[in-house]
Length: 149
Image 1: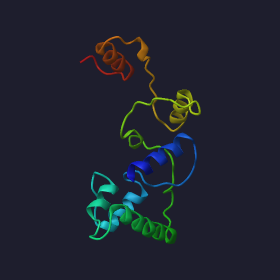
Image 2 (image 1 turned 135 degrees about the vertical axis):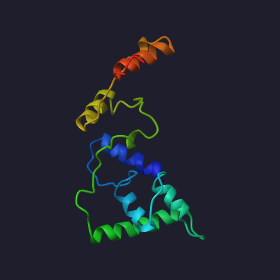
Image 3 (image 1 turned 30 degrees about the vertical axis):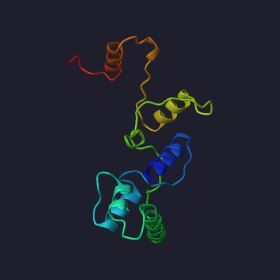
Image 4 (image 1 turned 90 degrees about the vertical axis):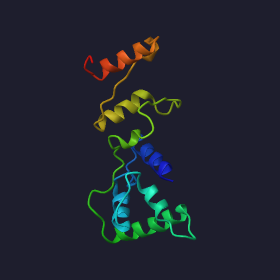
């Protein structure tokens, strides 16, 4: 569930769709849930829900029950500035910092521009010039301005 919602939010940001979605680790839903459950796990809100699912329920059922409560609470007392599809710094790269572009609908140039517009530092590497692991490590070190050691 968490991976699906994070993927959805990344897609919103990459395609510049401004739709409120607070499901990042540390986002509005995560903060609300931590308050409601009396603390939160560094593993994220999905782990918190799973750990606190009562007998006779499932984590998915519990998620939707809590989501209804979250929507109810936030509708009564909306917090200012809790929206955003802006991609956070590290959260959108949870699984990989490498992007492969298989779809013609979003080119690497478009994605790099969108990420740059959102404050990301975009680094491009010409991997076709590498023939050894040493070539790869050296190119990455130069691109990221690593010290010689």
